[in-house]
Image 1: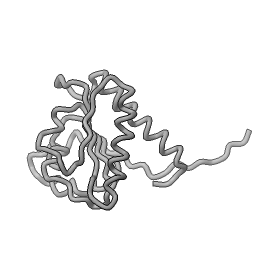
Image 2: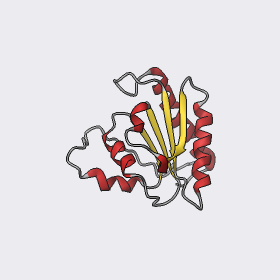
Image 3: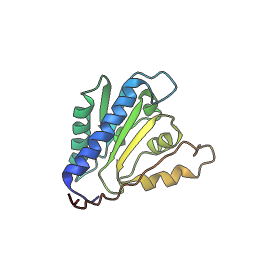
Length: 153
């Protein structure tokens, strides 16, 4: 991702604020779910500490909103776990980290919001072709850069 670090930081804070605001307003899912967030990160060596740091900083931001959160390595994910949360954040900080099959399947079948940040999104293609997975509710955005141009005035 390119661009000034402060601009990326502002965009990330906006994303966290939006997700937390939706969560506290109950707008994430139709089913009544207590306002909770699951924060998952890659813990594989040698850069597992980077994912944990992102998770801790996200938890710090989520602490400003009336919701609980759980932080854990994605490698410890249990099948169906994200259904207990209104939103799940995943930090893919380790390139091509092997994700648990249950996590990939749950991401594709859940009605909950999943914020996928970083690498390993291509691993969803391994479960994408399963006939039982609905594809109509999947939305994705790709942000590549923001071009800053001087204004005259």
